[in-house]
Image (cartoon, rainbow, N blue to C red):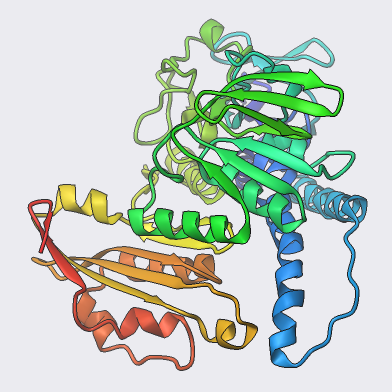
Length: 461
């Protein structure tokens, strides 16, 4: 008979925490999971899912315009922000219900309260003040937007969390940041008719992505009418009679109805009682874990964004499944963080897996780069001046494809399938002997027979 109240206690009801709790409970373990806000975490409640729904909404005005080139006459259209928000809220509520249903079906105890560590095996449930004990604890509390408190007037700004709940659609917005969250929301708001400015301190948006895709997306966004100010930052935000006034480092004074800060995310560890339990964190407050997601305290694990490894929902779920194998199936399993397909749901979209050209040049002595830029078939009749970019990065020595990068419609869908291909270790020769599927944009991936250029010791030739 266990001397603990629970075999497993999970703090955090996001994708990683719910998966760990549900699967452990299905194995017959006595499990409790505590969440202080809503089950579903960042992805379901205030991240990927509502964001993708907003992306779809923002694309319709272009679809209506494109229809004319194909013989359709589209009548007067209008957009209702409140209807979109209500529909999004209904879908999020449905998904949250499914998360809870899965936990309940596995006989996990669902607690709607904040839980804080008292020591390595004891937790306090804040809502009731009750303390409980657990043999094993998993911390999966995710991350939160950095409020950028050093910025004067930061309290007047919104985060990506707030963007999903605006009472009214603004007429103008300034978004500070150059990462995928900033870029995606810039495209969303612009697509919904909002005058949009993106301001970023770096030389180019999306700093860790392939340079060709970064430049290609930047040019496409500007062509659509999004203003992008690189090498610049906000110095101050203040309130005016007709909105907000922004002082910038290099671009003078800007005005906007709304300012959104998308300047990174912080691990959600504040006030969790980590110090009391002896759990070590890094300088950013992220929980330090080993290759098996175990903290420096033997019975405490941490998963997902709170560990600041790879901040993606499928990664948190994968880490949860590795935890189950390690802790309950006598099969120590390390999470595999290599070759993770990634998408930026911008307009046009980015899909990528593996090394960028810049990263590959540092790891491999000689590369072949296959690059195609072309107008997709749909654009020939719609008249839209868009271009797709596709790149394959090949290690010359092994012929393995070490990076694949796409800018254009459905790039994320293609990147998912390319992830399987690269994970399997396919070579460029495997791509070359694969039959093309015509007419598709993806056929370009298997018809680029001659390298566009080579790179040796970091130099293009």
